Image 1 (cartoon, rainbow, N blue to C red):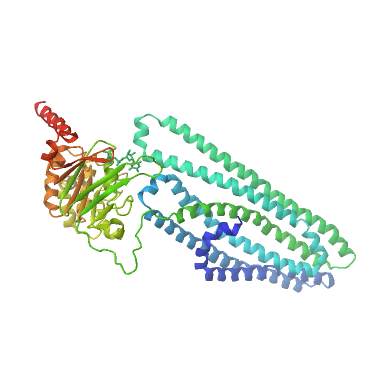
Image 2 (image 1 turned 135 degrees about the vertical axis):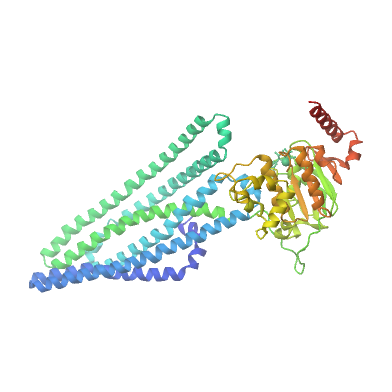
Length: 587
Ligand code: M5T
Ligand code: MG
């Protein structure tokens, strides 16, 4: 693959700022056009001096040199300002685009990609791309322009000498290419290791309680040290390579200067070129030293940058596996959801697994009724309800809402109608108020109070010193499992959903509070559809329908009384829990 193909993902971004690049390029042309005149002034000065020495003449040339240097400085500043600024603009666009694509991914994406790896790409790789777009473009432009300008003047002084001076050039270019490939490979290995390290840090921060509880700190530290050492080892291999590149380039340049001195010196002695021209010529050569060395650095930046462009591109092109369907022409997407849900012979298999988690599910939940799902752990309850808000995808035709495929609904319409309380409660590190109003940003304070009251958490919140302004998580208060669950319920209720799904959402709440919340929910959800998953008979007994899910299949379906009479899984569960209750009363 050529470097251009590697950089292709950046083209749209570059195109967006082409005017800026044009302006920056013009400034670069100006600064270099002025800078190549510097040796010309020296040449005139020396040639004049060899003919007639005048103090005023010297002053004039000195002033001229200062003027040239100043003008060049101004344009260099402008070039840098514009071009480096553009790299920041594109960095801004890229970072937004990365976040946007991540935000649109289906939850399954984050099971397959490690957070640390994503973070590494969004930070380290983005930085490498910025260096490519800013300094790398700027220095290569400057090098190119100055070399071309210098070459024109050098050829005019002596074509033969110029040829000699550039003899080592092919060697240098081969060298740069050879090193470039190596740098690219090594840099990719470094970035991969950096992703690993980031992932380790992230997991150890997120899993801090577990690591402490299992006393695995030392083991984790050792494992981290190993990864860190490997990272440094790889970084040092790159340093070795780079350390060899620059001196080699400098050496080649020094070599050509020696050749020019020998041959050019002879030309001067034989009066074929003037002393001034000779000095100007060697000045050009020394002035070329830095751009050539910068070229070595640019090669490094470009190689790093292209490796990172690929890694960022991988993030950006990941198509969300779940998105709005394109309906046949002339067919409008449904805008209203009443709340009837139907599973039709639905079978679900997770990618990468052999056995289906859900088998031939046939189930209808009429609008405005409630369904409870019970069943042993791992039976597929969470998987089943995740299909309704399309957190996972069911095959077309197997899941219908109000008689239409769930895929026909725009995601926003569908999800707006659903209140979802996931099994694992997640709260943001914001205030309780913001967490409750997460899905209803325009909710009034009354609405927040009302939803939390229904979830039986309002009074507890009001007892916190900062009430609803209490921060949750790392920078604030640590809530109990049951408190988090009830806030999550309030968060779902405040959206006033047509369909409410509670996935074991009361598991950390005591049975007494649970009953009160259920009573409240029954009131609020009258005429709406409710699905709740639970392991407790006490939770599910009043539901219009109860489904028993075992190993991915619905084995029993009916009301509490019907199921109790069936002498199956539900009856057993019921009896066991009744016994437990009695024992609790006796105890
Ligand atoms: C049912 C598997 C899981 C289990 C089965 C979410 C998820 C689940 N599974 C995957 O392979 N990949 C996934 O992303 O599916 O899992 P569940 O639906 O979460 O079961 P449950 O909700 O009935 O269990 P529980 O413990 O919450 O009562 O084999 O490995
Ligand atoms: Mg579950």
